[in-house]
Image 1 (tube, helix red, strand yellow):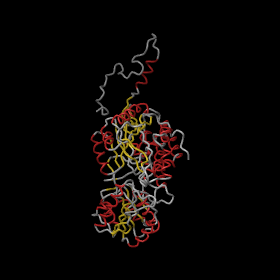
Image 2 (cartoon, rainbow, N blue to C red):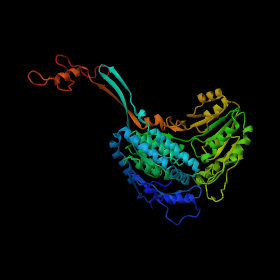
Image 3 (cartoon, one colour):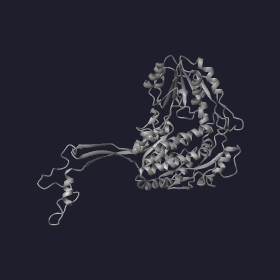
Image 4 (spheres, one colour):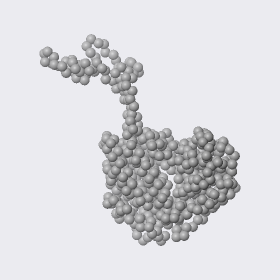
Length: 561
């Protein structure tokens, strides 16, 4: 599919989008002599080159080719983005809700029309297979579609006659300038979790994509401009720790959305809250699947393999620990066969099931944690370390790995490996499995595989985890619900997207209104001509005391108390 003509910034020399497509079609391990294109900033409706002296390389994880160069935004560029968002807010907040929704309706149409280009960018920069990349874009698109139905979530409440002539009602109003800090593992989906809901609710937005794979976010920002989002409503800056600190500290930014690691998320939550901001932070995870003895073997094994090894395990909802009630023995061979059947390859290759990890450092960390499990007594039933893919020898590949006999005290269990590694554990009963799952610090997602409704019901009621699958391995809620991680997997009060997401980006204003019924008569009297031709007493709209009545001081009744 050809790109829309308005994709000027990607196809220009500065962005070089066509060059990136060529790189994916025919990757070359030998560095190109051409200067890599520069990733642009979006400030006040314009894509601009950064003036920074500091740049980082955006690399293809399968080849190590440098796809583009990303700027570490300067302080003045960041300030300009915030200033643009601040200037756009007064007009955008009073733009009628149906008008804002129409922008999102056009936006979802443009995302659908350019799905393949977006997915290819994700695959090139992040490494996941094209099928996974399409899913990445589509799950974000679903949130855009939900934003088109935001109106009911913006409704307030009213109670008439809380006292004589007095009504009380609430309004949901936007916060102002809000910001999002995105991870590398879902470069299209997570930005779309954030800014579509925020701007449709009337806010303006400053987005910081991951410095490892910014391409999809820049493309999505360009599509948002094409859809009719006014200048300044969405701004994009790039950077690392400095930009994060500026977002946390800037008094104009009212709220921060974050998805990423425990360390970064807890830092952002603490610093942002200390600056008086709302913060929602989705953190790390250790998601367990509990496999009951009565579970269907074929469907359960396929679900485990896909959830553990898909996207190279780089998902916050990946199943990284499987608890086999009654033992692992009957599951070992089928699971081995399923894992061995997965093809390790560059993400754009037609036969790829598992792509590379994001960086050499991520690969080294995963291999170190596999080794630590083996050293602690776990059996490496399937070893993906040292994987080499012909034609992509420089890629960050780790093959599907199965660790058997893992216990709770092992580093490989306690740490989020964030790689294609499944820790297999044993439990003698469902109660023991529940104790194990609930004993982990994280509470993002979990699943149970069983044919027993009673077991499933007990599990869903007693497990201390925010998202539960029953015979569903990755129970990510659709966007009319919210992404509800618990305990160590989330910091904040209001979750992303759904009703809670809209509540996060809005604030409640409560109005108590008094219009005394006797004013109707006073207004009528004032407007009626007097015999002498003069006006009546009190004046139109007067709420003053009538003649002959003692004025009651406001604030002495229970409403004013």
